Each structure stands twice: as C-alpha cells, then as structure tokens.
Amino acid sequence: MQHNSLLTVILSVFLSVLVAYGGMRYSINEPMRLLSLTSPVFVMNKAELVKSIPPDSSPEVIQAAIDKWQASANKLAKEGYIVIDASFVIAAPEDVYVNPGK
Image (cartoon, rainbow, N blue to C red; front, top):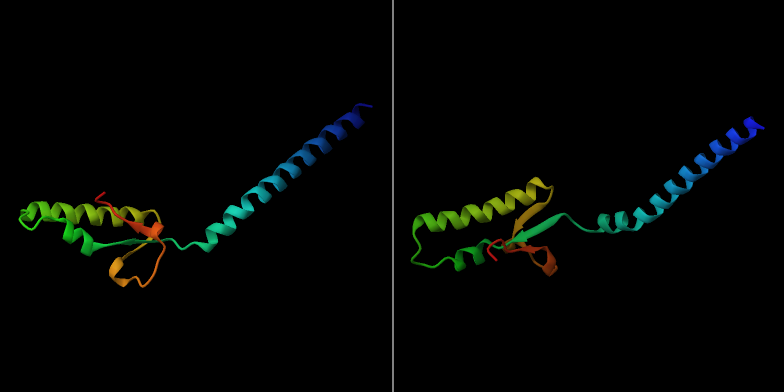
C-alpha cells in the first residue's frame, strides 16, 4: 500500500512539472515569435541635436550636448541594440527613433 502511494506522489509530481513546463512554453511562444520579428535597431538624429544647440553656445555646452547624445547611443549599444543616424534611414516606424534631449 505504501509503495502504491509513493508511486502516486511521484507520478503526480512528474505530471505537474510536465503540465507547468508545457504551459510555460505555450505562454512564452508568442512573445518570442514577436521578438524575432523586430530588429534591435534605434535611430538617433544628430542633425536635430546640432539644430537644437543655440548658435551662441560655448564650446563646452556644445561638447556636453554631443557627449550626452553619444552616451545615449553607447548605452543602447551596450544593451545589444544597433544605433544608426537618421540621415541613413529611408523609412522607419516612429517608435525606433530616440531623442535623448527631450
């Protein structure tokens, strides 16, 4: 009798793990599929950055703005994204554009 209840417990645990694994695989399948359809690319616009700096700004202010822009690009790159300048983009959805100044 004790052997039978041990077998029942083992089978219950095994089936529970199997069902949990199947459910997890099913629930993550769609997000993974959608992720594979998106490119890890962000677009930054250096020309807009330059235009946003007042013409009478000191070299230090200009350099600080450029450094901030570059730091944003470096952070994205470190996270695994490709960062390109907007002057190279022919067409892209709005959500890939990054504006670190705002």
